Length: 263
Image (tube, rainbow, N blue to C red):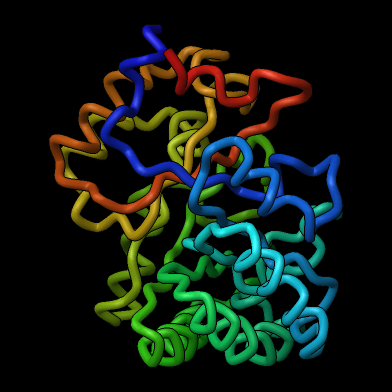
């Protein structure tokens, strides 16, 4: 790899839920800014659907004080550390997802965040019609702030109970929802791990991408740590006209997390 050339035309953001995790949440936006980033994203960082006005205000202030923009936010997806991967498709968790919609949308709107990620939820026991209804509800709320709701495919190796494991499965769900502000979250690590040709996917379907996230495969490390052709990936994204942010959602311990971007 030639680090100076990699992703020169891309706009990157840091996922603060997977990078800078050695710091308290409220210190991570400033850490991202110190490393040269002007945009961040987050999984839902609270234990429940509504942490209260004070907790939300603290996080908003930390983001604003750091001078970074929030460009992606997950809806409440349950206990991610314990293996939960979304709430919207399960009857027993649907009410929690619905309780989070207005909270997450309002917070995103206050910070000008354009993308909200709705993870489907683990099976068995997921309900497709419930998922569609909840995605429509989320999309209708997000429309009020000019935001897009994205649907993500995860790899089954790490997420064996998650039903949406391919771009095709995600596209089918998005088409069923039938809202023009619902799009695909192309997490290229998950897709590559499932054997998809990510270059062909970009060439054919980049117009359906509402957001892109990256890590290298194998290992979910930074670009260059695995076998994915990131020089080509970024070139294909640029050629396909993708102009959104690319979320850095990889795991890295110690210094050098962003050396691949530098000359």
